[in-house]
Image (cartoon, rainbow, N blue to C red; front, side, top):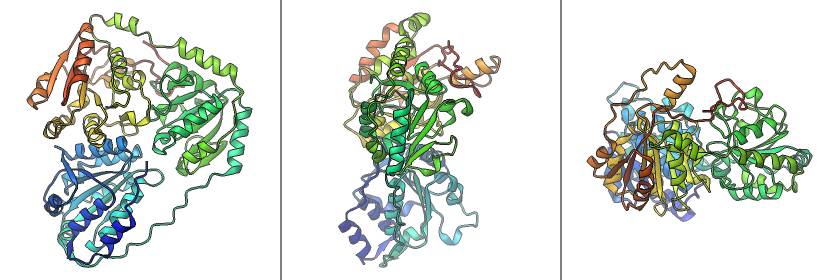
Length: 573
């Protein structure tokens, strides 16, 4: 996923050029030198010097309608392209509106450089107009951060920021730029401190041979994979390893697509809303090979009951994740790609286990027809999503928000690559799907991009419909409307004695007409016999389009592992 640094020639031209330039000029030239072509941003007072220079650069600027939308669009761009995203905002509320996006990028390990304007240095700390300490506010949720004090520092600072964002385990980096530093003109180009000599952990032959011995000894081995597979550029190496060993596979939400859904060894997503075949396999395995995953609570359920009889091999680029929640019997740190390629244990001796896992996958396949009949003539959302994902082009990207629709997408849509699925995992951010789809489509314009949203989530960043129209970005929107905060309502129904407190959204607007007010095509469907034509219309549209889908508010996501329970204790419809 790492974005290559600029060529030596490009860097030298900035560092050695002695023409008088402002901090704003040096910032933007240095960003361009990192290979950046697109910036998502929103102007304001403190960052105005940057916007004054911006039209004279080769950067494409996308004006979103809220700074949170800018940040999430940059995340979608980064996740769809594998390159580092970039977002601009002004000081004060502009910067604080970035915070949710920064946290989202941090928890999902997404490389984004966030640039914020700041009040002049002589006003910092005086509670000046639109001043906040964004450096301090974001310290726990960035990989690194800077306050620029001298325009001559900016070329080296920017170069290092993009390097840090992308190297190792990716993440967000903040550059806070005071207005006077942006305006200041200098002929100096300070020699920036050299990068720390980051030496990725080498493949340890003793650990590799130990892991191979554990795999050969296991009779019920299982791969548990996460987002690190895709982010570590290890998809092909992982698929080759699965073919070499024949070991069954379960995935986290962010690991979806690392193995195609229809692969014979794939059992599905595990965890709170995981599939039964996957959760049962975890509970019964005797060796858990964890690759690019971190034992998140939504995946493990009650941790001390998770894979209770299994030894653990943990493969992760981030040494801090190893032994953090579950002690590993053996670990492989450093490059996940190289470690997966180095494992050559041969075919696992687990034929009976493989057959049991395959049989369970068949046994617990979704019965769409019976479920659809139960809501007839209404629309059963999982069936609609199943049908949609099998009609879209092979390279399509699906983004989504958080809630019931997110879990239905994970359970029922087909993914062939991790970049096919973009959702907010660690932070669980409502309002993520639409701006993420905008960024994904701008970054990967050749791919079909669909966002699946719920009526609660959609209203949180609905203003980005204006951005779709302004730039004619042909994102296809599927809005599942149950007139409720569906996931909260489900938990209130199941765990809070049906005390439906503040989840009723039956005063929603007509979303199709809202889309039309933004000059975007919009239409509604309410019955099962409208689904096929609705999907066809959605996919045939040349510009942005919204399909408003009315569904039953009583329809819940199953299975469901209650909080504090083992993943084997799944509640069903």
